[in-house]
Length: 550
Figure 1 (cartoon, rainbow, N blue to C red):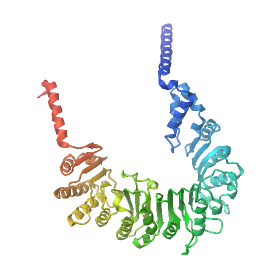
Figure 2 (cartoon, rainbow, N blue to C red):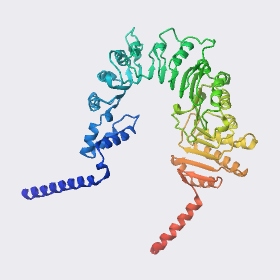
Figure 3 (cartoon, helix red, strand yellow):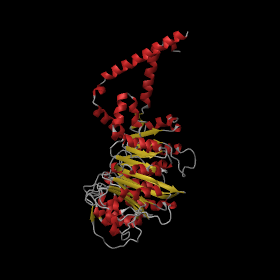
């Protein structure tokens, strides 16, 4: 018996070996096998970089395809040069990746509470550091920052430091200042700097392309608007991206300052007192295509934002300005009282991601105290924008607008063609406002497309569980009003993600009769056509199965 089993196992092994040989022959016939290693390595790089900025190593699974690919991936030093460390990382994994990266320039992101385990490893490869982003325990970030001047950093082009975690546990008297010696030639290619809660001498920051300062106060001659303008002017010829937050500790002077031209500016993000935001914008000359995002403190009513909108209006209405197509409203509440209201404008007509505010071409934020002050702010912002080009409105996050506010907004958007909205109480108020505007004979936009995202997002204002029925009732009334006036809505589009909507086929069919085209989950919805198709299928099936006719 044992001899027979041994013979069988030997034959099985022989067959496996033959299968491996046949697979190798088949692989040799494929076009990719004829490519040189250098080309395959570049293909691996394109695949690996497609996962950025996640910086993960999912791409490395392709190493398991065959031995050749495994060897090519190991030899591709640049493939291992993007390192991101999280709390789940082990030092051994980082050491191995540093080893495999060979002499390739390093792009490193460390977002770990235990960053002290990894920061020293970076300094051992200081001459290869290309981009560094380090957040974690304050003491570790500061030790790393203060050690940088001890090394030559010939490749370093981007530095991002944030020591905010456990900052209060730093020993008393700890100096938290970016070393000036870092800018004495040790990092000649440093053009991108991002500091959070790290004071710095603004006078040494020159020739930058990208600058982000959050509470990074000036250590030389105080924090004044004049010094801030000088800081921007020092990098004026090359500065393209700027983010400024909480920089001025001194009271703002009403005096005039020198005008600073930033000819290649692409992105300006300001978060500070509204008076500073206003003064800063008035003293900057920006390209008409520059994106401006303003998060001003102290905007609680219409008068608070009036002065700020003067330079903004001039910028967005410039003849050479980027054409704004889509608006996004975002409002949040605090126990029923509006606490935040933001207007974003985009050039694309497709609905933007609700969380990607930094991709907007224009943003202004406010903190109204009542619905009336929210309406004041909204009206002033919309009047400042070139409303004739705005055809799309994304109000999926505009939960706190009343019917009156919706009417005011729509009346100020005469070219509005499409609206994106969630199924919630805000949608009910919006459709009610559209009906009232239609009946009163006031300004009414050429609205032709409504995209109703049936993701039920409940808010404090949604007291009961059923928010779907009020929305459908208000939508039905709006569609009937449009249909009765001889201007039926051209397109009604529904994205369904909740069972309560899938069970309402009769209601959907009733709405189908009131619109030009009904789209459900990306497909045209036509109940009569669906019934005809079903009947045709039934007849064909019965013809093929006569015994089942009964």
